[in-house]
Amino acid sequence: MRSEQEANRAIERYADMVRRLCFVHLKNEADTEDIFQTVFLKYVLYHGEFESEEHEKAWFIRVTVNACRDLLRSFFRSRTVPQEELEGVAAALPQERREVLDAVLSLPAKYRDAVYLHYYEGYTAPEIGKLLGKNTNTVYTLLTRARQLLREKLGGEHDG
Image 1 (cartoon, helix red, strand yellow):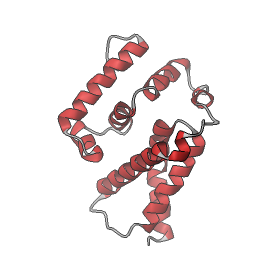
Image 2: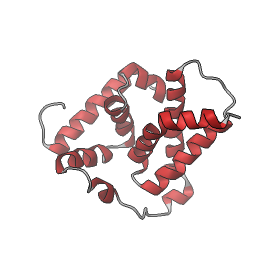
Image 3: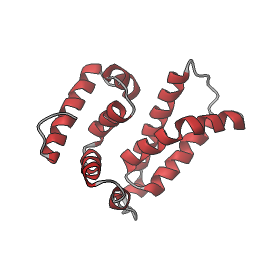
């Protein structure tokens, strides 16, 4: 079991990333907070050692994505309707950013993951491939298709 100091350091370092990743998947604050707590509890209980900060960060991403997917596949989740809607959170954003956020969140999960990790966390396609257990060329394909879907949704002709 990890010490309180280690847990606090991890929370300071990875809390924002874990919350954003959860929100991209779950689209509501209550589920995001549940998974956030689950991820950090798993970290405190994890007995393994990390080779580097990048290894630790990759562990957090993998555990977060898996926990979100588990929740989305759960029987309880499939039989409920979320109380909070994304509109409440998105309303605080400028109109232009709100449209982009809505478009990204409306992408199928396989595209959302790749887009989030590439554009928001700055990972390269080979790194995303390792994190998601996909071939590098598959990641390039997912990013290309996601950009095309976003262009169609947003009416743009260029990346950016």
